[in-house]
Amino acid sequence: MANVHNPGRLRLGVNIDHVATIRNARGGEHPDPARAAQIVALAGGDGITVHLREDRRHIRDDDLIRVADATGLPINLEMAATDEMLAIALRHKPHAACIVPERREERTTEGGLDAAGQHNRLAPIVARLTDAGIRVSLFIAPEPHQIEAAMRLGAPVVELHTGEYAHAHGEQIAIEIRRIADMAALAAKNGIEPHAGHGLTFENVQPIAAIPQLAELNIGHYLIGEAIFIGLEASVKKMRLLMDEVR
Ligand code: PXP
Image (cartoon, rainbow, N blue to C red; front, side):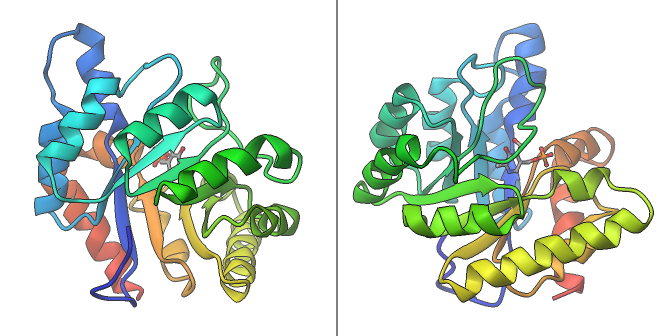
């Protein structure tokens, strides 16, 4: 999601996977993630994020094409570092690919990628994606050694995992915000564009959105959940407003 028009703006990537989760609960075609992508565009979202999981539990291969065709928004493909996903990314050429850890038994992406420990596995994947013109992002815990590993891998973007922040209570909340802010600053200082995401809600988004180095937030589950009550357009618009308020 290159931001050529307004470099100061914090972009909102909306993860529409869980529209597909609801569709898949019954089979058939409703609700359609491609329609969701169009509404996200109308509501001021800056990009569409989808996670094609190995087990295809939400987004399916054909959704990738239909979602990309349905909107002019850039597509950010979240993918495990596997040969299968690499081949799919190279075939579809999304604007960006965010490499995430993936375990079949997890409910969602629970931790960050071990970019430091998996250098040799990740290096060829980062290189192949980059050579294809896909902007690579690594979904990592907000830790210095992970940023350093991202630098060694030559990744232009890191997405800082905000799950620990989202689950924190009491004094731990401020500690987590500081950790994310410090790592966003460290990444930016070293020429890496920092993004953030996971577990963000209307209630907890603003301290993260206020971190000046962050260029993009990726938000899914909460927005789709709120859409049940207030509609997807209103849900995205409200998140956009909350983000803009602190910029
Ligand atoms: N960013 C990444 C890399 C993710 O894996 C996810 C979850 O799929 C998100 C952002 C969005 O998280 P949530 O659905 O909790 O908003």
